[in-house]
Image (cartoon, rainbow, N blue to C red; front, side, top):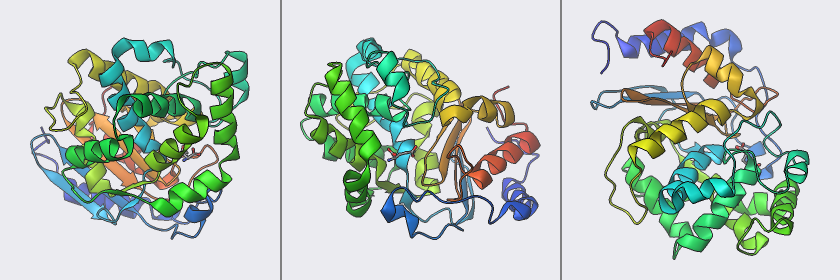
Length: 308
Ligand code: GLU
């Protein structure tokens, strides 16, 4: 429940004001050519409590490329379908290496450390390619149902742009195949993975969709509901692995499970209470949104709404 003593709209305004010195710091991701031309100075925040109360600031309704935030939804889907068998192919340990590292995958013989680094998410995409009759439509239906927005789409230009230039992800997929950890053709898996990354959603849509992890929900789609125990495990993974090699820092400063993406978005959840999403494309050197992290740090500190 929201704390009745706090005016959350006012809180979001004051956080934005306090963070003005950080505006313009950092760089947006340019390694995906299609993302390089976007306005880096967008800033949106959306806070969605489980009781239905919602608060927003700035560009909260504008859609952006969710990129790796998609990994929490695809992992949830694959886990709900395959159950614990998923963890035979993907681990549950923080990687401590960049999200697209090849070295660790080689010396750990093709089993990615966790589903939130690219290698792990490529295995997850492979599972969904095997399991869903139309995995492209199936994942769209899932995020549409979660966010209650029927017109969420893939950005075909972003997906194509990554397919054309994602040499590292292609290397990961072929390495996974060489270790027999892909069931399908690596090129088909990559196309699906890049599409998942290209999904466009707004902060408010993401904040609603994040309720998947806030409390057990009954969904009307082909992907099964998660059990309480599965929710616990997914939140634990977000807490320990959601922020590339900066997951410890996020736990330390924000104190919530969450996931970031190189489009500048971050989703964070407080189990049983609320979900939040922030968007600001300028990233730090670890690939996380500078303003996004600062916003969530101030939000959980000022409102005392972290899990610790
Ligand atoms: N599509 C991006 C990639 O695979 C996702 C990266 C991210 O958001 O972490 O490189």
